[in-house]
Length: 150
Length: 168
Image (tube, rainbow over all chains, first blue to last red; front, top):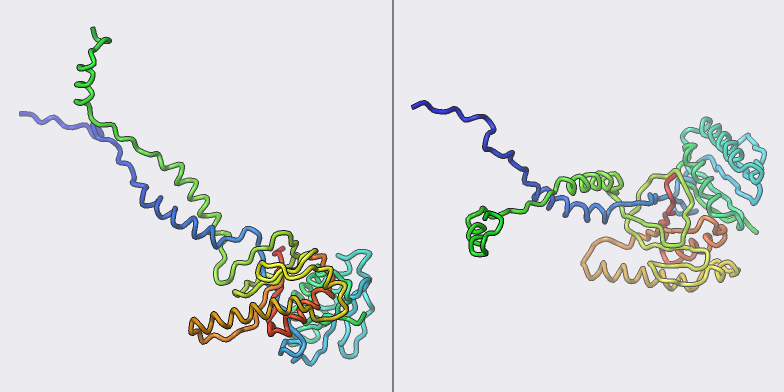
């Protein structure tokens, strides 16, 4: 008796993957990730306070950035005086100039950290955060906030 | 005639046929889940508390990328000040005040501190009150209002204030 060779694939159906365990995993993972996901990235901006042991308190260089309604002024650098920067005409250019001054100071005093921001009462919070960014990016770390006298 | 089978014949035929197994086509659903999973993994925050901006507040943009620790939240909106989701006082009141201390805010924060300490005591936790606070303030708020809020927070013992900002 001659055995007939069975054709490969004939009569057999392709095996289907069992996707149900994968589905169960996804159903558990998606809510867990949704819970811990952030769609608007909110980050933290550190702040030091006078007398709380911040970096500015320990610093031999008493760097202060005065934020007035119309100007920025860098103070507290020994043997140097910086002209105030007018900030209301072109805020971006004023910040660039402030950054250049801060970079120059940090190059002279690379070990110094922390700066005191003396802020006028009517200055909006957004402007304060912008200066804090410039101070941090120049390498001075966190800022200490002080209110200027009215 | 083939097309006109009797009811009994039809029933007999059905019973001899193999049962039909309906299978769900999950491939497209798996595709959706895979894309969703990748998106969520990208926006996942690891090692820090998740802070969402309070409705109505426009946080200032910043280049900072630091994460938060779990702390009470004080929100300074254009029209009101909110502590842990509850309105405390109108912002105008703080703006017009000549005193640094905001009494209503002080009482609310004292309550938050007391609650935290009581919960820690009940749980037998050795962790002390750390004085951490997250401040979400609208970007247009004048600095003197924030100064009053921060001063009042410090009088209650919240010395470690972190500002919430939107990542640039």
